[in-house]
Length: 309
Ligand code: NAD
Ligand code: VAH
Image (cartoon, rainbow, N blue to C red; front, side, top):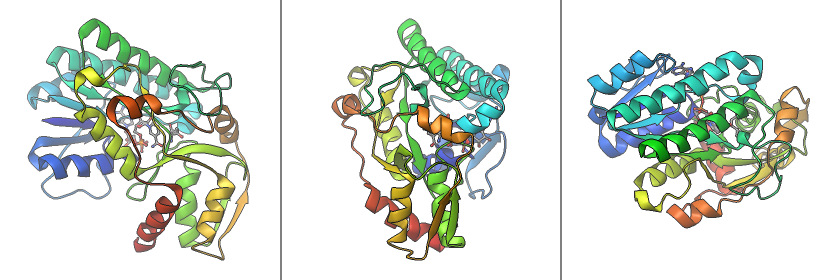
């Protein structure tokens, strides 16, 4: 059985569909603290709080889980407001999942983030191995998680694999309280109201990725032969970077009357501390990572789906 934690969130909703498409409903157990808004008939759901080791261990044991996609987490903006919660879920949750995976000989996928980088990291074409001194609690938990991955891989031969996601753009489920949420919100507001007040400046440029590519990266990484995986912290991956103003202009090409205004809040400092672009050559070399969607294709596809909603 495959176990997904945090599966009612932005990535989990789409990853669960992709795994069920591949393996069928009977082979995927979808868990979270809360049930998703739309439950699919035939799918296996359960409640799991990853901060409780006994619960994590029991669900793996009783369902004969062999692979875990550990997505439960607290994102950057929520983590700045609730640092204790971010530490509890992001660090204790990862530790519990890795220890249980070690005990039950499971493989693990766990997403890190470009939030491991900070103001002292090179901002352009950020290398795979570089300074990781984040300024946020979220970033601190992700650095800790990466080191836990490396520890378990080297000391316990645990097959845990990870990518440092940039901001993910999608339409199936809303983003969960991050600094990159503007890149999703802008689409929905443009279609619904024709206006959007963006919480970062027009010039703020961030690495982003469309959800189909994010899901593809997870599946490709987990499909790769073990001997090809040379990074046991977390792989840099990238698709495209754009500024808030460039995204607004790309949307205006489809919705000419769309008006975007800018009113930066506390998330601006977080955005400014993260890279503008990422060097993902190691992922390209080791497991042939390559995104399918560029900015133009992503914008057309997002607007098509958001309009249908
Ligand atoms: P999300 O906030 O949309 O979903 C996270 C889910 O975790 C939520 O459904 C929430 O209910 C659940 N959760 C919270 N506490 C829990 C607990 N104690 N036990 C079990 N479940 C719990 O987040 P997401 O965007 O789907 O992100 C999933 C993972 O990917 C996170 O680790 C996040 O840091 C990482 N990531 C996401 C992005 C992005 O842009 N979406 C980028 C980089 C990394
Ligand atoms: C956040 N979307 O903003 C997440 C992600 C790279 C950004 O980690 O917190």
